[in-house]
Structure formats: structure tokens, C-alpha cells
Amino acid sequence: MNAIERIELDFIDLGLGLGLIGLAIALSAWQQLGLSGQFALAAARTVVQLLVVGFFLEFVFEWRNPLVVLAVLLVMLTIAAIVARNRIGKKIPNLLPFVWGSIFVSTALTLVYVNFLVLRQPQAWFDPQYLIPLTGIVLGNAMNASAIAGERLASTMNTSQVEIETHLCLGATPEQAIARYRKDAIRAGLIPTLNAMMVVGIVTLPGIITGQILSGISPINAAAYQILIMFMLAFATLMTAILVTKAISQQFFTRSAQLKKF
Image (cartoon, rainbow, N blue to C red; front, top):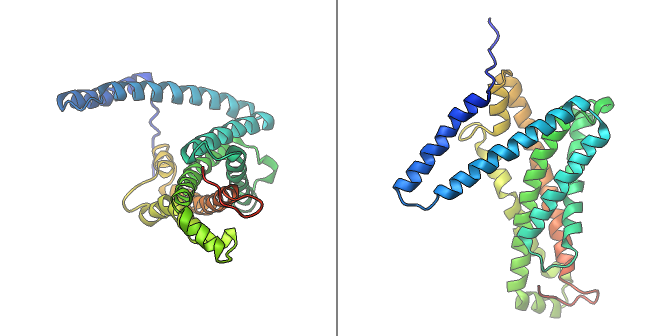
């Protein structure tokens, strides 16, 4: 059986692909949606950002320096934590370190488990070919889970002060008073991951499996990697949601168990 030919895209191909954005802009103008400028800006940012990332990662992959790889991961982690904190709200004090730590712990535990037990490459744990893409996937989903769960819990606690204070007056601890709200927030943070797991391969083909198939990798091997990734995301997003909601709930109470509002 002949090997599958790998089709590589050059700048001419990307320029032709840009025609799709041109058609989208034309359709937007025809329907008077007012999205033409946003499409143009989004396309420009997509091209610039991804090309810069592509050239930078090519340099990182060739150098294979563990300090450089760790520096890249720390930058990615910090950006993810800032984005999640901004979505949750800036009024809660000291929220950024808690979000950063929650995403770090869940991502680190996930990657250590996969790297040492599944991929089994302890001698090359810093291999950017595996570490950077897997970290990026986990960080993106952990960021979304923390943002959704954190925002849900913070907004619910701000709008349910009477109910929470009633439970406190009846002798409940702060943890008992907000237990239901915290569980609901964690469930909300897990909805995107669970929905994706329910329909993966049937309704959608995720980017990882699609990219691997397009690059010539066996569909079975690509499916195996996607299964691993979905399991990674299930654990990482759950751990992140648990840690973030725990940290936020503690910020809403004083040491004397009095409820605060932000």
C-alpha cells in the first residue's frame, strides 16, 4: 500500500485560503450585518499570531532546551490565569494567585501522569513536541473551566446573600452554607468537557485528530491520542473547578465566618 502523501501548505495556499474570509466579508456586507471590519481584524490577528507562534515554536523545537520550554509553559499558564481571573471578576482580592495555582496544580498533575505512565518518556520529559501541545490543550480547557465555575459561584454568592446568611444563623459552617452553590458551579465548569466527550467522533472531529489525520498519521493512532486527550481534559477541568471554587468560597468569608460581598 502506498504511503499517504502529506500535503504541506505554503504562503500561496494560505493566500488562496484567505479568499474564504473575503467571501465572509462580502456576505456580511451584503446582509448588512456590520461584521466586515471584525472579520478583517480577526483574520489579520489570526494570521499574525499563528505565524509568530509557528516560527517561535519551530525555534523552540530545534533548540530543545528545558529552560526555554519551561519558560514558554509559564507564560502560557500566566496568560490563561489572567484571562480566567478577568472573566470571574477583578473585585475579589488575591484571586489571580489562586487561579494561577489551581490551573498549575491540575495541569501539572495531568501532565506528570501522562508523561510518566502513558507516554513513558521520563528521560525526555521536556520534549517540546509533546509537552507544549499537550500543555496548551489542557491549559485552554482548564482556563475555561475555572472561568465558568468561578464566575458562576461568585455571581451566585453575591445574589444569594440572604439564603447564605440564614444558613449561617442556623449554625451551618461556611462550607455547608454554600455547598450546593459550589457543586452547581463545578458542574457548570464541566459542561463543555462532558458535552465534548459525549459527541466526539460522532458530531465533531476535534482539532487534534483532524490535524494528525491531515498530517498523514494513521486514523487509529490519531483516535488513540484523542481518547487520551479527552481523559486528560476530564481530570484537569474537574480538578481546576474544584480548586478554584474552593479558593473563591474562602475569599467570601472572614475568619469569623462572616459573609462578604464583592
